[in-house]
Structures are given as C-alpha cells and as structure tokens.
Length: 159
Image 1 (cartoon, rainbow, N blue to C red):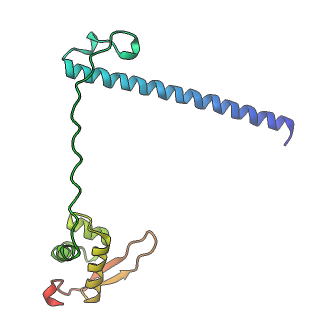
Image 2 (cartoon, helix red, strand yellow):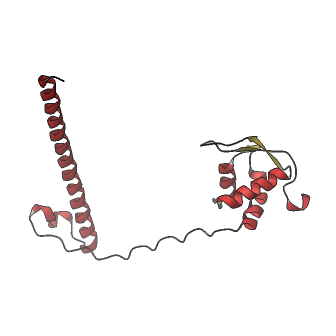
Image 3 (cartoon, helix red, strand yellow):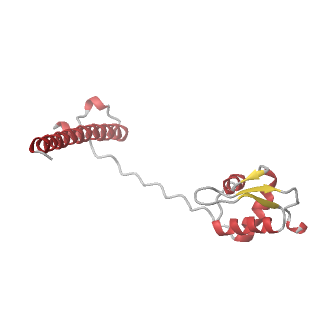
C-alpha cells in the first residue's frame, strides 16, 4: 500500500464516521420529536387540554402535567400444556381435517395449538407404526417430514 492509498482510505473512513454520526444525530432528533408527540397526546388525554394550550417539555415552555399512571395489563396466561394422551386424542380427532399429504405444521393448524414436540412425535410414530400414515418424505435439517394418509381408520379402537 502506498502513502497516497493509505491517506485516501483514511480520509474515506473519516468521512464514513462523520456520515454515521450525522445519521445517528438525525435519528435521535426524530426519536425525540416522536417522544414529545407521545407525551403531548398522552397529557392531552389525561387533562382534557388541547395540544395548543401546552408546550412540549423539550421546548423550554411549561411542561404538561404528568400522565396518570395506568395499571399495566397482566400478561396473558400461558397456554395449557397437554399431556401425551390428550395430544394423541386431539390428533386422532383432527385427522379427517388433515390433507392427504401433511407435515407437522398441518397437524398444528388442524389442532389449533402447538403441542409439545415429544408428544406429537410419539403420536405420529404410533400412527406410522399402525399403518394409518406412512412417511412420504423423511425430514432433515430445515425440511419437515411429510406424511401420507393410507386410508386406515385412525381411531384407537381399530389399532
């Protein structure tokens, strides 16, 4: 590398640094404006005053009253974890809604929930072992195993 090439690259890096800093500052200003707007709208909702009657906190004028604290919503209850026999019964009940060739994802959609992997795998293995389905294409890596219905009755009484 020559001295001129070194200086050019160094100058280019300095310019990229200045551009990056400018971009960050612009983004920061936009975020501050958005925050001020949220503050203003929230204060307007809480006090009933219009935005023109108040000044933004960053503008140096009087700040609107602090918004009343709102109770955060409780987190949603986690989905109920089904045991393997329940998953098996659910899969067999939803079996008619599955396409002729299906994957694990199709089973989850038919069930309306995502069962524990082990329980679903065990059920699919039982269905395969009992001749109700067969493996159409084995899965591997990011590819899901595809199963094909054989036409046999999936109800437990017929196994």
